[in-house]
Length: 177
Image (cartoon, rainbow, N blue to C red; front, side, top):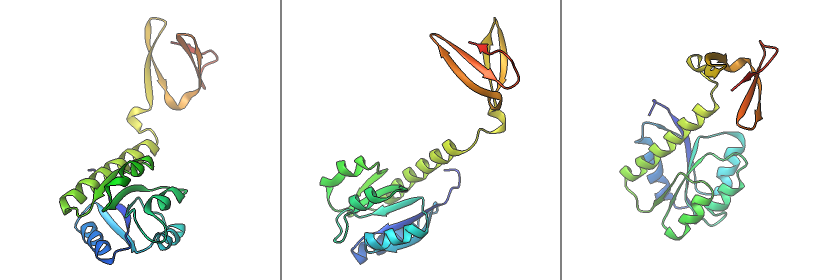
């Protein structure tokens, strides 16, 4: 898992369930605990001034449901629902939750969900990172020979039926492939 540390918060209106989440987070090396909240309103206030990679959130809470809370976030971290109600599972996945833990759940189940979240974060970070030095060129067959084209030199690519015109900064005419 690339030694990544993921910051997270826990939200549950039941103090004992919140304490269990905090304990499980502390026992999971890839997670860094940023805060625990007994209400979605307080968690939202926290998130207005801080960002986290993931949230572990109960669905059935008195002030705002976990589902409505997640829907209300303009920047949505990775979501894992922790709830005693299986009937909300489909709705949970409609807001792109990475996992759905049904209470009571074990440390092993929690850590499996955390591993999914860390893998998702790894994928998101790789997608956001610039192309590395080894992958800065492509090789294409042009006019019966292989040509190396630097990705940073490509100005634009124009589609023409079954062919592509690749316009680069260092040529007056395109490569046609």
